[in-house]
Amino acid sequence: MINTIAPGADRDVVAEALRRSAPHPPHYRRRVVWALEENPRLLTGEAHIAPHRAILRFIDLLHEAGVAGIVRPSCPQCHRVVRIDKPLDGQRVCRNCIAKSRVEECVRCGARREPATRDEQGRPLCPNCLITDPVNLETCIVCGESRMVSSRTPEGPVCPNCRPLPTLLCAICGRTAPHRTAPYMLSKLTGLPRCGGCDRRQGHCTVCGRMRGIHSGTADAPVCGPCTRPDAELWRPCPTCGRAERLHAPGPCPRCILKQRLHELLADDTGSINPKLQSLHDALADTERTGTAMRWLSKSIVFTVLSDLGSGRRPLTHEALEELPAGKVVEHIRSVLVATGRAAPAGRADGPPGTARE
Image 1 (cartoon, rainbow, N blue to C red):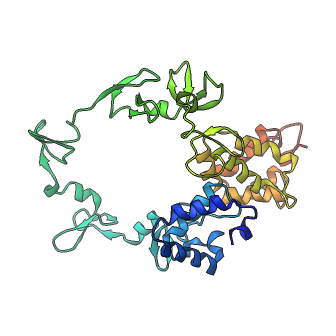
Image 2 (cartoon, rainbow, N blue to C red):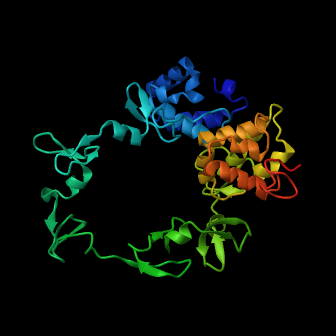
């Protein structure tokens, strides 16, 4: 069935995804398979009517592994491509939509929100009133105020404002700050403190020279993860590009999955990308923030614009882009096309506005 939707899909990847999505007794896994056999459209965008939650997890794992043809479903209420596992009126919706369906008026403040709890009479209380309820407050032994308890000591409760904050030294940038103002954490590779800024920082590794996330070294001489701890069991080579990555599941690395997804969107009926769009493909694929890029590609407007450009249904002109609803997505695609030299900026003398430059 999977091969019908995605010819050439790796059987081991599919089997591992099924095992991880339904780690329950075999009879539950069989129910998942039977439901997919009864309605294969669940794998191509209609999983909002899936009878089992494991089907949604199975689709996410296949999509992360780069299996072509698998489509993550959108929420039938807000139409966003996000996690949908909450049942509502025979469909599965996102957390925001299920919260909106449960809105009630708080009996204390009058706010219309999803109740966090109910009082003795069963009346709804919002989250703010739950936090400020005198029943949930205690006197802090440091400031003497009646507040929520953050930690308990042998002497008594301590509120969040008075709790002791550890001061740690980032092993990479050398900055020192309390935990509250700089989210320090211990590196899983080195066991040393690392601040939030260094946890998200990218740089050219001084050992291998590649642009990767910094895991050790210093801000001036960064070292990437594979060079910090070259453990063969931790860093496995990607079967597509050969780069050492922390692969949590069989299949290509996130960067190769992104390239594959872009190729699917921008390729024509022959399976090849128009030379005019190749620079757009390369520009969108040239990023280290693959997770952000994949979430961006999952938006319906992005899928529509890129697939229309790839198939030729929409010409590569400013006028064609202006026919679309105005927004950041269309402007970003336009700016990338201009930056890569495939579309002349509107108003340029070397090409009339709305014309693609050959």
